[in-house]
Amino acid sequence: MKSVATIAELRGYLSGQRRILVCFWKKGCPGCMAASKVIDLLHGPDCAVLGFDCTGSMEAAKTLGVDNTPYWVLFERGEKSAEIRPTSDGEALHRFLTEKAGFALPEPILMAALEDGREYARNVQSAIAEILFRRAESDEDTLISAARLMILKACAGEDDIPACVDRQIAHCATRLTEGAPEGLREQRRLAADRLRGEREKLTEDLEALRRRMNEP
Image (cartoon, rainbow, N blue to C red; front, side, top):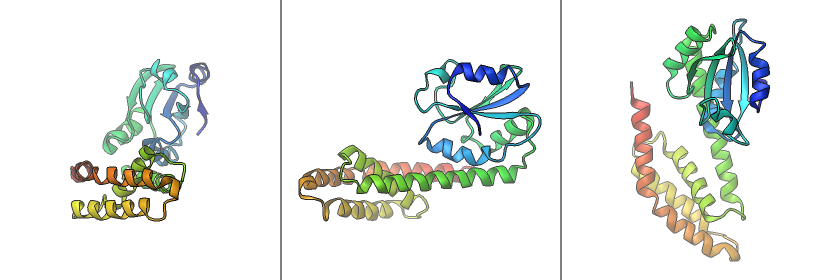
């Protein structure tokens, strides 16, 4: 997908296309990673696809009413005609792409791409979390964020969420404290103590995730 990063560049494309889908994204955005697998499927004569890179700043996107990513806006003859947050509702996204943008995309293929994208995003986040967790330079906040990501991924599919959270917190706390370099032992001990205090919040987040996954 070709991308631009300024309104001037975008206007240049809008002036030359009857219909164009602009996908606002930024590096490191989990939802953008998930949506990328759908973008790979968007080919057709009736609608062009263009990325708008918001990595450096959202200010340019905000002038078009976009305040977060991922966000997709359909332009027809240079004017906004429809918009959607692509990862919020698969069925709504399918209607948007087929009825408004004119793509021939079967719903089962779209849903499979969304799930593939979500799994890809989870794997990337997990890999990043592992790297941050191992780095000696990581500060306490970074260590906690990395541990949270690792625990959320490990427990997302478990039946007994509280028990899983307990196991994973104990595992991460042990990794934090055992073998820590002498100059970092106190920092790692404090991070382990703080992680133990995250038990209730982690459990609540995972149970909320399970409810969303079970919604019809």
